[in-house]
Image (cartoon, rainbow, N blue to C red):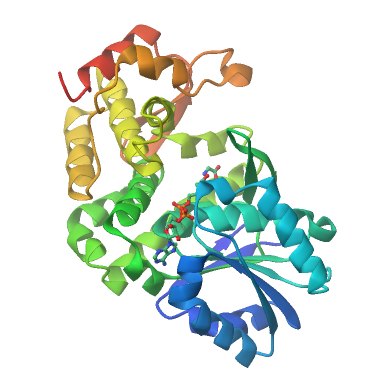
Length: 361
Ligand code: NAD
Ligand code: GLY
């Protein structure tokens, strides 16, 4: 087992290893939790792993109530939160009753939001079950629900007491869920950890075959990278923005495709586009960009923009009006493992890169 400490407030640990789910009860006891516990999960995760998790919790003396949230982004909603408040109240959950968010990023976000607000905050434990959730969404305390068409519009910063990442759970992900998570994992290699990037380059086939050692290594490195970033800027006021590497153009592609190009795939294209901009500005080497493209392709991710025009993409790209006065804010690489934030990219360069990266050109 590997451990990362997140240096925020009193600090909390991220435990990473194979077979941790069955030991979750004793991990919770180790940090002083006991009595009742509420598990929030979805039907898929419950069917696959619910028994193992609940048996371990009961064996450690927890009285468990399980709430189910249906699968899908549309359930990251105020309606779901309201129902969960009712179920917590019916179970007589108290200030010390931990809420265990057991699922992917959707469950982590909505259950985290409920933990942050019920009784002004009850202990939250993240038990992430997708690669994306293990390397990204379970760490750093962003919890949220969607509001109408507005994603993550209502939320809070609410750090968990513990994160338990059992890498064995990743073995049942679909290839697409795995590659979506790999897009964010590769992102951590570029923004923060050159060693992770090199490891992915030389061990990708083991990762894709769900070799336990390889999964533990990449989740550990990416979780450590995220923990280091959020510890420096918990409230996302500046430095934490580097986590948005690949998201500026990626967001435009995802939205312009009507979400047919999913988030991980859009980030993959967005990372290539950001690197291409950096190459053309003389900041980053073409051979490093070629290494990135090669890795993304091997991970089953796209590196070119699907049939979309620059006129469709640019209006939907992510602006930061407050900080960058309506300009595009880009996270650009200087080298693999070293990025910086800038608003000094000319719109004409952005436009040309989008045109040149189109699949059809
Ligand atoms: P998800 O939670 O929808 O899970 C993807 C699919 O995988 C679901 O169908 C789920 O049932 C299934 N699944 C989960 N675990 C499984 C397992 N072990 N085996 C088989 N199937 C499994 O999607 P996601 O990609 O994990 O998360 C996306 C969400 O995360 C979005 O809502 C996004 O906004 C949020 N997010 C939050 C943060 C943050 O910092 N809070 C960061 C990134 C993304
Ligand atoms: N996933 C973005 C963040 O945690 O800030």
